[in-house]
Amino acid sequence: MQQSGWHEGEPGPRAGALALPLAVGLLTVAVYGLYFSQDLGAGSPRHYDAYYTLIRSIGFLDTGDWLAVHRNTQPDFRKPPLQYMLTALSMKAGMDDMLALRLWPFVFALGTLLGTLLLARLIAPYSPWAMPSAVLLLASSRVLAGQARMGLLETGMACFLVLSLCALFLAERDSRWWIAAGTLVGLGFLQKAPVALAASALGVTALCWLPGERAYSWAALRRSRDFRIGGAIALGLCAFWPLVQVLRFGPKYLKVQYLWQMIYRFHPHPPAGAGGVGPEPLRWLEWLRFDSPMVWLTCLALLGVALLTPRFRRNGKLFLVALYVGVVIAALAVAGGEVYPRYIVVLTPFLAVVGGVVLAELVPWRRPLAGGVAAVLFATNLPALAQVTRPSDANDADRMATARLFREALAEDETPIFFYSEARRLDYPPPAFLYYADLDRRVAVFNRVGLRQLGPAKARQRLRPPYQGIAHRDDYAMVGRYLGPLVEVGRHGEHVIWKSAGRDRPPGGNDPPEE
Image (cartoon, rainbow, N blue to C red; front, side):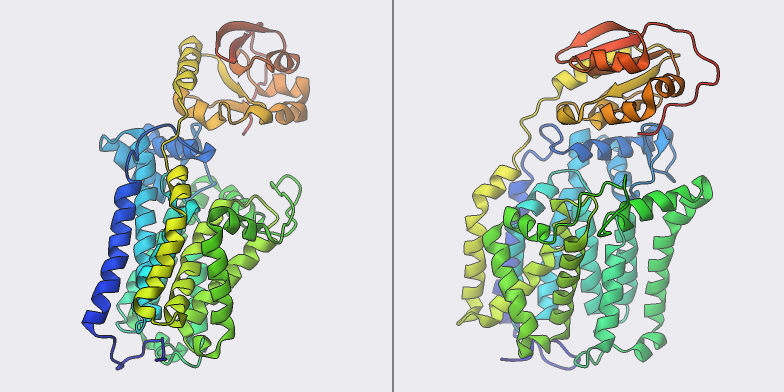
Protein backbone atom coordinates (compact mmCIF):
# COMPACT_ATOMS: atom_id res chain seq x y z
CA MET A 1 0.00 0.00 0.00
CA GLN A 2 1.28 3.44 -0.87
CA GLN A 3 1.78 5.93 1.89
CA SER A 4 -1.49 7.83 2.37
CA GLY A 5 0.00 11.12 3.48
CA TRP A 6 0.92 13.68 0.82
CA HIS A 7 4.38 15.21 0.75
CA GLU A 8 5.92 17.88 -1.45
CA GLY A 9 7.29 16.46 -4.66
CA GLU A 10 5.36 13.19 -4.58
CA PRO A 11 3.08 12.51 -7.58
CA GLY A 12 -0.63 12.17 -6.98
CA PRO A 13 -2.96 9.67 -8.63
CA ARG A 14 -3.75 9.92 -12.35
CA ALA A 15 -6.46 12.39 -13.31
CA GLY A 16 -8.53 9.56 -14.77
CA ALA A 17 -8.44 7.66 -11.47
CA LEU A 18 -9.62 10.77 -9.64
CA ALA A 19 -12.43 11.87 -11.99
CA LEU A 20 -15.03 9.19 -11.26
CA PRO A 21 -14.83 9.16 -7.44
CA LEU A 22 -14.77 12.97 -7.39
CA ALA A 23 -17.84 13.04 -9.63
CA VAL A 24 -19.63 10.54 -7.38
CA GLY A 25 -18.82 12.63 -4.31
CA LEU A 26 -19.98 15.90 -5.88
CA LEU A 27 -23.10 14.24 -7.28
CA THR A 28 -23.92 12.95 -3.80
CA VAL A 29 -23.72 16.49 -2.39
CA ALA A 30 -25.81 17.87 -5.27
CA VAL A 31 -28.56 15.24 -4.91
CA TYR A 32 -28.53 15.71 -1.14
CA GLY A 33 -28.95 19.46 -1.59
CA LEU A 34 -31.75 19.17 -4.14
CA TYR A 35 -33.68 16.57 -2.16
CA PHE A 36 -33.46 18.20 1.24
CA SER A 37 -34.06 21.72 -0.06
CA GLN A 38 -37.66 20.81 -0.88
CA ASP A 39 -40.12 22.84 1.19
CA LEU A 40 -37.19 24.39 3.07
CA GLY A 41 -39.31 27.34 4.16
CA ALA A 42 -42.50 25.37 4.84
CA GLY A 43 -44.10 24.63 8.19
CA SER A 44 -43.39 25.96 11.64
CA PRO A 45 -40.07 25.81 13.50
CA ARG A 46 -39.31 22.26 14.55
CA HIS A 47 -37.24 23.19 17.58
CA TYR A 48 -37.70 25.37 20.67
CA ASP A 49 -34.40 27.20 20.10
CA ALA A 50 -35.28 27.97 16.46
CA TYR A 51 -37.65 30.63 17.78
CA TYR A 52 -34.68 32.16 19.60
CA THR A 53 -32.85 32.30 16.27
CA LEU A 54 -35.80 34.22 14.85
CA ILE A 55 -36.08 36.76 17.66
CA ARG A 56 -32.32 37.28 17.91
CA SER A 57 -32.13 37.85 14.16
CA ILE A 58 -35.09 40.23 14.14
CA GLY A 59 -33.45 42.09 17.02
CA PHE A 60 -30.87 43.52 14.62
CA LEU A 61 -33.64 44.89 12.41
CA ASP A 62 -35.79 46.20 15.26
CA THR A 63 -33.00 47.97 17.12
CA GLY A 64 -30.72 48.93 14.24
CA ASP A 65 -27.87 47.93 16.55
CA TRP A 66 -25.54 45.52 14.73
CA LEU A 67 -22.97 45.42 17.52
CA ALA A 68 -25.10 43.47 20.01
CA VAL A 69 -27.41 40.47 19.86
CA HIS A 70 -30.82 41.34 21.34
CA ARG A 71 -33.50 39.06 22.73
CA ASN A 72 -36.70 40.24 24.35
CA THR A 73 -35.56 43.87 23.77
CA GLN A 74 -32.44 43.32 25.93
CA PRO A 75 -28.80 42.54 25.03
CA ASP A 76 -28.28 38.78 24.92
CA PHE A 77 -24.82 37.42 25.73
CA ARG A 78 -25.48 33.73 25.15
CA LYS A 79 -24.49 33.42 21.49
CA PRO A 80 -22.21 35.16 18.96
CA PRO A 81 -23.79 37.09 16.07
CA LEU A 82 -22.75 35.66 12.69
CA GLN A 83 -25.71 33.45 11.72
CA TYR A 84 -28.19 35.85 13.30
CA MET A 85 -26.76 38.67 11.20
CA LEU A 86 -26.98 36.56 8.02
CA THR A 87 -30.58 35.65 8.83
CA ALA A 88 -31.44 39.30 9.53
CA LEU A 89 -29.89 40.39 6.23
CA SER A 90 -31.92 37.72 4.41
CA MET A 91 -35.10 39.03 6.05
CA LYS A 92 -34.14 42.61 5.19
CA ALA A 93 -33.77 41.53 1.56
CA GLY A 94 -37.41 40.39 1.60
CA MET A 95 -37.04 36.68 2.34
CA ASP A 96 -39.82 34.95 4.27
CA ASP A 97 -38.97 34.48 7.94
CA MET A 98 -39.12 30.67 7.85
CA LEU A 99 -36.95 30.41 4.76
CA ALA A 100 -34.46 32.93 6.16
CA LEU A 101 -34.37 30.89 9.39
CA ARG A 102 -33.36 27.68 7.59
CA LEU A 103 -31.39 28.92 4.60
CA TRP A 104 -28.01 29.44 6.26
CA PRO A 105 -27.97 26.21 8.31
CA PHE A 106 -28.77 24.39 5.07
CA VAL A 107 -25.97 26.16 3.17
CA PHE A 108 -23.59 25.35 6.03
CA ALA A 109 -24.63 21.68 5.93
CA LEU A 110 -23.75 21.50 2.23
CA GLY A 111 -20.46 23.25 3.01
CA THR A 112 -19.75 20.61 5.65
CA LEU A 113 -20.32 17.83 3.11
CA LEU A 114 -18.02 19.50 0.57
CA GLY A 115 -15.42 20.10 3.26
CA THR A 116 -15.61 16.43 4.22
CA LEU A 117 -14.97 15.44 0.61
CA LEU A 118 -11.94 17.75 0.43
CA LEU A 119 -10.62 16.62 3.80
CA ALA A 120 -10.72 12.96 2.72
CA ARG A 121 -8.85 13.92 -0.44
CA LEU A 122 -6.13 15.76 1.49
CA ILE A 123 -5.68 12.95 4.02
CA ALA A 124 -5.62 10.10 1.47
CA PRO A 125 -4.69 11.43 -2.00
CA TYR A 126 -3.76 7.91 -3.12
CA SER A 127 -7.23 6.56 -2.29
CA PRO A 128 -9.64 8.62 -4.40
CA TRP A 129 -12.63 6.53 -3.34
CA ALA A 130 -12.17 7.80 0.19
CA MET A 131 -13.90 11.00 -0.98
CA PRO A 132 -17.32 9.62 -1.93
CA SER A 133 -17.11 7.07 0.87
CA ALA A 134 -16.68 9.81 3.50
CA VAL A 135 -19.41 11.98 1.97
CA LEU A 136 -21.89 9.10 1.80
CA LEU A 137 -21.18 8.18 5.40
CA LEU A 138 -21.76 11.74 6.58
CA ALA A 139 -24.84 12.13 4.38
CA SER A 140 -26.31 9.19 6.32
CA SER A 141 -26.48 11.28 9.49
CA ARG A 142 -30.01 11.94 10.70
CA VAL A 143 -28.70 14.62 13.05
CA LEU A 144 -26.94 16.52 10.24
CA ALA A 145 -30.00 16.31 7.98
CA GLY A 146 -32.26 17.51 10.78
CA GLN A 147 -29.96 20.37 11.77
CA ALA A 148 -29.70 21.43 8.11
CA ARG A 149 -33.40 22.31 8.25
CA MET A 150 -33.72 23.33 11.90
CA GLY A 151 -32.49 26.92 12.08
CA LEU A 152 -29.86 26.34 14.79
CA LEU A 153 -26.11 27.05 14.82
CA GLU A 154 -24.50 23.60 14.73
CA THR A 155 -24.07 23.13 10.97
CA GLY A 156 -22.32 26.50 10.71
CA MET A 157 -19.95 25.57 13.50
CA ALA A 158 -19.20 22.24 11.79
CA CYS A 159 -18.72 23.88 8.39
CA PHE A 160 -16.13 26.40 9.57
CA LEU A 161 -14.42 23.70 11.62
CA VAL A 162 -14.03 21.25 8.71
CA LEU A 163 -12.98 23.96 6.24
CA SER A 164 -10.43 25.43 8.66
CA LEU A 165 -8.71 22.03 8.94
CA CYS A 166 -8.79 21.70 5.15
CA ALA A 167 -7.04 25.07 4.88
CA LEU A 168 -4.54 23.99 7.53
CA PHE A 169 -3.64 20.90 5.44
CA LEU A 170 -3.54 22.89 2.18
CA ALA A 171 -1.05 25.28 3.78
CA GLU A 172 1.47 22.45 3.46
CA ARG A 173 1.45 23.07 -0.31
CA ASP A 174 0.91 26.84 -0.40
CA SER A 175 1.49 28.97 2.67
CA ARG A 176 -1.19 31.45 1.58
CA TRP A 177 -3.75 28.97 2.87
CA TRP A 178 -2.75 30.01 6.39
CA ILE A 179 -4.62 33.27 5.74
CA ALA A 180 -7.74 31.33 4.76
CA ALA A 181 -7.34 29.10 7.81
CA GLY A 182 -7.15 32.11 10.12
CA THR A 183 -10.25 33.65 8.54
CA LEU A 184 -12.26 30.42 8.86
CA VAL A 185 -11.19 30.00 12.49
CA GLY A 186 -12.39 33.53 13.26
CA LEU A 187 -15.70 33.03 11.46
CA GLY A 188 -16.23 29.80 13.39
CA PHE A 189 -15.72 31.72 16.61
CA LEU A 190 -18.33 34.29 15.53
CA GLN A 191 -20.73 31.50 14.57
CA LYS A 192 -21.07 29.76 17.93
CA ALA A 193 -18.04 28.53 19.88
CA PRO A 194 -14.23 28.46 19.54
CA VAL A 195 -14.17 24.83 18.37
CA ALA A 196 -12.33 25.63 15.14
CA LEU A 197 -9.79 27.66 17.12
CA ALA A 198 -9.16 24.79 19.53
CA ALA A 199 -9.03 22.17 16.75
CA SER A 200 -6.60 24.25 14.66
CA ALA A 201 -4.37 24.84 17.66
CA LEU A 202 -4.40 21.09 18.33
CA GLY A 203 -3.72 20.44 14.65
CA VAL A 204 -0.73 22.77 14.35
CA THR A 205 0.79 21.41 17.55
CA ALA A 206 0.30 17.79 16.54
CA LEU A 207 1.58 18.25 12.98
CA CYS A 208 4.72 20.04 14.21
CA TRP A 209 5.31 17.26 16.71
CA LEU A 210 4.63 14.25 14.45
CA PRO A 211 7.85 13.05 12.79
CA GLY A 212 6.14 12.06 9.53
CA GLU A 213 4.91 15.59 8.73
CA ARG A 214 8.13 17.21 7.54
CA ALA A 215 6.43 20.24 6.03
CA TYR A 216 5.26 21.43 9.45
CA SER A 217 7.74 22.73 11.99
CA TRP A 218 7.81 25.51 14.54
CA ALA A 219 10.86 27.01 12.88
CA ALA A 220 9.15 27.16 9.48
CA LEU A 221 5.99 28.64 10.99
CA ARG A 222 7.94 31.37 12.75
CA ARG A 223 9.51 32.34 9.43
CA SER A 224 6.20 32.26 7.53
CA ARG A 225 4.68 35.68 6.90
CA ASP A 226 1.39 34.09 5.81
CA PHE A 227 1.17 32.11 9.05
CA ARG A 228 1.61 35.31 11.04
CA ILE A 229 -1.06 37.07 8.99
CA GLY A 230 -3.46 34.15 9.37
CA GLY A 231 -2.83 34.03 13.10
CA ALA A 232 -3.45 37.76 13.41
CA ILE A 233 -6.72 37.47 11.48
CA ALA A 234 -7.87 34.56 13.65
CA LEU A 235 -7.02 36.32 16.91
CA GLY A 236 -8.49 39.61 15.68
CA LEU A 237 -11.83 38.06 14.69
CA CYS A 238 -11.97 36.01 17.89
CA ALA A 239 -11.23 39.05 20.06
CA PHE A 240 -13.43 41.58 18.25
CA TRP A 241 -16.89 40.57 19.46
CA PRO A 242 -15.95 39.86 23.11
CA LEU A 243 -14.04 43.16 23.28
CA VAL A 244 -17.00 45.15 21.92
CA GLN A 245 -19.40 43.44 24.32
CA VAL A 246 -17.20 44.00 27.38
CA LEU A 247 -16.67 47.66 26.48
CA ARG A 248 -20.41 48.17 26.04
CA PHE A 249 -21.89 45.97 28.75
CA GLY A 250 -19.10 45.09 31.17
CA PRO A 251 -17.68 41.76 32.34
CA LYS A 252 -21.11 40.12 32.60
CA TYR A 253 -20.70 39.13 28.95
CA LEU A 254 -17.65 37.00 29.77
CA LYS A 255 -19.45 35.31 32.64
CA VAL A 256 -22.46 34.36 30.54
CA GLN A 257 -20.70 33.50 27.28
CA TYR A 258 -17.67 31.63 28.54
CA LEU A 259 -18.25 30.58 32.15
CA TRP A 260 -21.89 29.53 31.88
CA GLN A 261 -22.26 28.67 28.21
CA MET A 262 -18.95 26.84 27.75
CA ILE A 263 -16.95 25.98 30.86
CA TYR A 264 -19.84 24.92 33.09
CA ARG A 265 -21.52 23.15 30.20
CA PHE A 266 -18.56 20.79 29.77
CA HIS A 267 -17.53 20.64 33.41
CA PRO A 268 -17.99 17.18 35.00
CA HIS A 269 -19.73 18.71 38.03
CA PRO A 270 -21.14 22.16 37.23
CA PRO A 271 -22.36 24.22 40.18
CA ALA A 272 -26.01 24.27 41.21
CA GLY A 273 -28.06 26.45 38.93
CA ALA A 274 -25.76 26.00 35.94
CA GLY A 275 -28.10 23.57 34.22
CA GLY A 276 -26.15 20.45 35.16
CA VAL A 277 -27.72 17.10 34.46
CA GLY A 278 -24.96 14.87 35.82
CA PRO A 279 -22.16 13.15 33.87
CA GLU A 280 -23.17 10.20 31.69
CA PRO A 281 -19.99 8.70 30.23
CA LEU A 282 -21.67 6.82 27.35
CA ARG A 283 -24.15 9.54 26.42
CA TRP A 284 -22.26 10.27 23.19
CA LEU A 285 -22.58 6.63 22.13
CA GLU A 286 -26.34 6.73 22.68
CA TRP A 287 -26.51 9.80 20.44
CA LEU A 288 -24.56 8.04 17.67
CA ARG A 289 -26.86 5.03 17.99
CA PHE A 290 -29.88 7.30 17.75
CA ASP A 291 -28.40 8.99 14.68
CA SER A 292 -27.44 6.24 12.21
CA PRO A 293 -26.24 3.27 14.25
CA MET A 294 -24.93 1.01 11.48
CA VAL A 295 -22.92 3.85 9.96
CA TRP A 296 -21.36 5.18 13.13
CA LEU A 297 -20.69 1.82 14.78
CA THR A 298 -18.88 0.86 11.57
CA CYS A 299 -16.90 4.12 11.67
CA LEU A 300 -16.02 3.60 15.34
CA ALA A 301 -14.61 0.20 14.47
CA LEU A 302 -12.60 1.73 11.61
CA LEU A 303 -11.41 4.47 13.99
CA GLY A 304 -9.91 1.73 16.16
CA VAL A 305 -8.17 0.30 13.10
CA ALA A 306 -6.74 3.73 12.23
CA LEU A 307 -5.37 4.23 15.74
CA LEU A 308 -3.97 0.72 16.20
CA THR A 309 -2.56 -0.09 12.77
CA PRO A 310 1.02 1.20 12.21
CA ARG A 311 0.54 2.01 8.53
CA PHE A 312 -2.39 4.29 9.32
CA ARG A 313 -0.66 5.88 12.28
CA ARG A 314 2.15 6.96 9.95
CA ASN A 315 -0.33 9.19 8.14
CA GLY A 316 -0.04 12.25 10.39
CA LYS A 317 -3.18 13.95 9.05
CA LEU A 318 -5.30 10.85 9.57
CA PHE A 319 -3.87 10.45 13.06
CA LEU A 320 -4.67 14.10 13.82
CA VAL A 321 -8.31 13.71 12.74
CA ALA A 322 -8.62 10.51 14.77
CA LEU A 323 -7.11 12.32 17.74
CA TYR A 324 -9.65 15.12 17.36
CA VAL A 325 -12.48 12.55 17.37
CA GLY A 326 -11.09 11.13 20.61
CA VAL A 327 -10.89 14.58 22.22
CA VAL A 328 -14.52 15.36 21.30
CA ILE A 329 -15.70 12.00 22.62
CA ALA A 330 -13.86 12.64 25.89
CA ALA A 331 -15.41 16.12 26.20
CA LEU A 332 -18.92 14.73 25.63
CA ALA A 333 -18.26 11.86 28.02
CA VAL A 334 -17.32 14.03 31.00
CA ALA A 335 -19.71 16.94 30.33
CA GLY A 336 -22.11 17.38 33.22
CA GLY A 337 -23.93 20.44 31.91
CA GLU A 338 -26.60 20.93 29.30
CA VAL A 339 -25.22 19.15 26.25
CA TYR A 340 -27.50 17.88 23.52
CA PRO A 341 -27.46 15.22 20.76
CA ARG A 342 -27.01 17.92 18.11
CA TYR A 343 -23.49 18.54 19.44
CA ILE A 344 -22.26 15.42 17.64
CA VAL A 345 -22.48 17.44 14.40
CA VAL A 346 -18.91 18.59 15.18
CA LEU A 347 -17.89 14.94 15.61
CA THR A 348 -19.52 13.05 12.74
CA PRO A 349 -17.73 14.71 9.75
CA PHE A 350 -14.36 13.59 11.12
CA LEU A 351 -15.64 10.16 12.06
CA ALA A 352 -16.91 9.88 8.47
CA VAL A 353 -13.53 10.97 7.08
CA VAL A 354 -11.66 8.38 9.14
CA GLY A 355 -14.22 5.73 8.19
CA GLY A 356 -14.09 6.64 4.51
CA VAL A 357 -10.29 6.68 4.34
CA VAL A 358 -9.78 3.40 6.20
CA LEU A 359 -12.62 1.75 4.29
CA ALA A 360 -11.11 2.79 0.96
CA GLU A 361 -7.72 1.35 1.94
CA LEU A 362 -8.92 -1.86 3.54
CA VAL A 363 -11.68 -3.16 1.28
CA PRO A 364 -10.36 -5.53 -1.40
CA TRP A 365 -10.69 -4.17 -4.95
CA ARG A 366 -11.21 -0.90 -3.17
CA ARG A 367 -11.81 1.49 -6.05
CA PRO A 368 -15.55 0.98 -6.56
CA LEU A 369 -16.28 -1.34 -3.65
CA ALA A 370 -15.46 1.10 -0.85
CA GLY A 371 -17.93 3.60 -2.24
CA GLY A 372 -20.44 0.80 -2.70
CA VAL A 373 -20.22 -0.19 0.96
CA ALA A 374 -20.75 3.44 1.99
CA ALA A 375 -23.65 3.74 -0.45
CA VAL A 376 -25.36 0.69 1.06
CA LEU A 377 -24.99 2.17 4.54
CA PHE A 378 -26.43 5.45 3.23
CA ALA A 379 -29.37 3.72 1.53
CA THR A 380 -30.34 1.94 4.75
CA ASN A 381 -30.82 5.32 6.40
CA LEU A 382 -32.87 7.01 3.67
CA PRO A 383 -36.27 6.33 5.30
CA ALA A 384 -35.06 7.81 8.60
CA LEU A 385 -33.57 10.80 6.77
CA ALA A 386 -36.82 11.46 4.93
CA GLN A 387 -38.71 11.35 8.21
CA VAL A 388 -36.46 13.72 10.14
CA THR A 389 -36.34 16.33 7.39
CA ARG A 390 -40.00 16.53 6.43
CA PRO A 391 -41.68 19.90 7.08
CA SER A 392 -43.18 20.28 10.52
CA ASP A 393 -46.86 19.38 10.83
CA ALA A 394 -47.25 21.96 13.60
CA ASN A 395 -49.63 24.77 12.80
CA ASP A 396 -48.87 27.94 14.71
CA ALA A 397 -52.18 29.58 13.83
CA ASP A 398 -53.46 29.25 17.42
CA ARG A 399 -50.21 30.61 18.85
CA MET A 400 -50.32 33.54 16.45
CA ALA A 401 -53.95 34.28 17.25
CA THR A 402 -53.32 34.17 21.00
CA ALA A 403 -50.33 36.50 20.66
CA ARG A 404 -52.37 38.90 18.54
CA LEU A 405 -55.15 39.02 21.12
CA PHE A 406 -52.56 39.66 23.82
CA ARG A 407 -50.93 42.48 21.85
CA GLU A 408 -54.26 44.14 21.09
CA ALA A 409 -55.32 44.09 24.75
CA LEU A 410 -52.00 45.34 26.15
CA ALA A 411 -52.06 48.92 27.44
CA GLU A 412 -49.14 51.32 27.14
CA ASP A 413 -48.34 51.28 30.87
CA GLU A 414 -48.70 47.52 31.46
CA THR A 415 -45.90 45.05 32.09
CA PRO A 416 -46.38 41.94 29.90
CA ILE A 417 -45.92 38.56 31.62
CA PHE A 418 -45.69 35.10 30.08
CA PHE A 419 -46.11 32.17 32.46
CA TYR A 420 -45.36 28.62 31.35
CA SER A 421 -45.47 25.25 33.06
CA GLU A 422 -42.45 23.00 32.46
CA ALA A 423 -44.83 20.12 31.71
CA ARG A 424 -46.45 22.16 28.91
CA ARG A 425 -43.45 24.24 27.85
CA LEU A 426 -43.48 22.87 24.30
CA ASP A 427 -47.21 23.52 23.82
CA TYR A 428 -46.43 27.21 23.58
CA PRO A 429 -42.67 27.81 23.97
CA PRO A 430 -41.83 31.18 25.55
CA PRO A 431 -39.67 32.24 22.56
CA ALA A 432 -42.59 31.44 20.25
CA PHE A 433 -44.72 33.92 22.20
CA LEU A 434 -41.94 36.52 22.06
CA TYR A 435 -41.72 36.04 18.28
CA TYR A 436 -45.43 36.16 17.50
CA ALA A 437 -46.34 38.89 20.01
CA ASP A 438 -43.49 41.10 18.67
CA LEU A 439 -43.79 43.62 21.50
CA ASP A 440 -41.80 46.83 21.89
CA ARG A 441 -41.07 46.17 25.57
CA ARG A 442 -39.59 43.44 27.67
CA VAL A 443 -41.74 40.45 28.59
CA ALA A 444 -41.23 38.91 32.03
CA VAL A 445 -41.05 35.13 31.49
CA PHE A 446 -41.71 32.87 34.46
CA ASN A 447 -42.32 29.25 35.32
CA ARG A 448 -43.60 27.84 38.59
CA VAL A 449 -40.11 27.55 40.10
CA GLY A 450 -39.32 31.15 39.22
CA LEU A 451 -42.41 32.47 40.94
CA ARG A 452 -41.82 30.32 44.00
CA GLN A 453 -38.27 31.60 44.32
CA LEU A 454 -39.50 35.17 44.28
CA GLY A 455 -42.43 34.58 46.59
CA PRO A 456 -45.65 36.62 46.51
CA ALA A 457 -44.18 39.76 48.10
CA LYS A 458 -41.12 40.00 45.85
CA ALA A 459 -43.11 39.06 42.78
CA ARG A 460 -45.49 41.97 43.36
CA GLN A 461 -42.56 44.31 43.93
CA ARG A 462 -40.46 43.29 40.94
CA LEU A 463 -43.27 42.83 38.42
CA ARG A 464 -44.30 46.45 38.08
CA PRO A 465 -48.11 46.73 38.07
CA PRO A 466 -50.29 47.25 36.25
CA TYR A 467 -49.58 44.14 34.21
CA GLN A 468 -51.12 41.87 31.67
CA GLY A 469 -50.22 38.23 31.39
CA ILE A 470 -50.87 34.95 29.68
CA ALA A 471 -50.96 31.48 31.21
CA HIS A 472 -52.41 28.06 30.59
CA ARG A 473 -55.91 27.85 32.00
CA ASP A 474 -54.82 25.23 34.57
CA ASP A 475 -52.17 27.64 35.94
CA TYR A 476 -54.30 30.76 36.06
CA ALA A 477 -55.38 30.39 39.69
CA MET A 478 -51.86 29.60 40.89
CA VAL A 479 -50.43 32.72 39.21
CA GLY A 480 -53.06 34.80 40.99
CA ARG A 481 -51.80 33.60 44.38
CA TYR A 482 -48.43 35.20 43.66
CA LEU A 483 -49.45 38.31 41.76
CA GLY A 484 -52.65 39.22 43.55
CA PRO A 485 -56.18 39.38 42.19
CA LEU A 486 -56.39 38.89 38.42
CA VAL A 487 -59.15 39.66 35.93
CA GLU A 488 -59.62 37.47 32.87
CA VAL A 489 -59.86 39.60 29.73
CA GLY A 490 -59.62 36.95 27.02
CA ARG A 491 -59.23 33.29 26.29
CA HIS A 492 -57.98 31.47 23.22
CA GLY A 493 -57.68 27.73 23.13
CA GLU A 494 -55.92 26.53 26.27
CA HIS A 495 -54.59 29.95 27.31
CA VAL A 496 -56.04 32.75 29.43
CA ILE A 497 -55.15 36.42 29.01
CA TRP A 498 -55.50 38.35 32.26
CA LYS A 499 -54.78 41.72 33.84
CA SER A 500 -53.98 42.77 37.38
CA ALA A 501 -57.13 43.76 39.25
CA GLY A 502 -55.44 46.68 41.07
CA ARG A 503 -53.83 49.16 38.68
CA ASP A 504 -51.99 51.36 41.19
CA ARG A 505 -48.23 51.30 40.81
CA PRO A 506 -46.38 50.77 44.12
CA PRO A 507 -43.41 53.02 44.86
CA GLY A 508 -39.95 51.63 44.17
CA GLY A 509 -41.03 49.05 41.58
CA ASN A 510 -38.17 47.58 39.55
CA ASP A 511 -37.87 46.40 35.98
CA PRO A 512 -39.12 42.90 35.13
CA PRO A 513 -36.63 40.25 36.29
CA GLU A 514 -34.43 38.44 33.87
CA GLU A 515 -35.63 35.19 32.37
